[in-house]
Amino acid sequence: MDFCFRLLKTTYHKKHGADRICFTHHPSSILCSSKFNLEPAESLRYLSLYDNRCLRYFKGHKDRVVSLCMSPVNDSFMSGSLDHSVRIWDLRVNACQGILRLRGRPSVAYDQQGLVFAVAMEGGAIKLFDSRSYDKGPFDTFLVGGDTAEVSDIKFSNDGKSMLLTTTNNHIYVLDAYGGEKHT
Image (cartoon, rainbow, N blue to C red; front, side):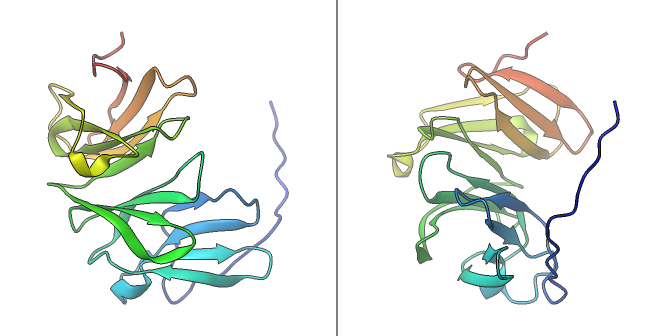
């Protein structure tokens, strides 16, 4: 199979660099984290690809953002940082809407309905939160046994029944989203 890609747009971010990115609900707008943590005040940017301008900066993280995820149902998004926090944001507001303090490098993901989000962290710990009441803490926590590496990324399947988890040891796990058991 041969694929042919056509370049649609190029944007430049020489001052901050570009690291984690994700689309918003508008096809010509994205979220982008800085590769170079020059100023914590500019670690997350909401960008218009149409006219190559920054629509909003999101302030709060004290270190590099290593995970970024847009809600599938509304203007909320999450960012996980090396400062050991997960922040919950709204595209329409500059200020952080919520914060979770955790240990290790957090990786974040929403399920396809936007009702649940997962935070994976060091030692294979995964915490599941209700998006509407995350401040009450996780409703479930489980461990991916046998791998003590940091989690690199986590994603829910389209049907919400499974999760993919990658680690810095180059392992990929397929997990049951309800109980954390590894699929074989």
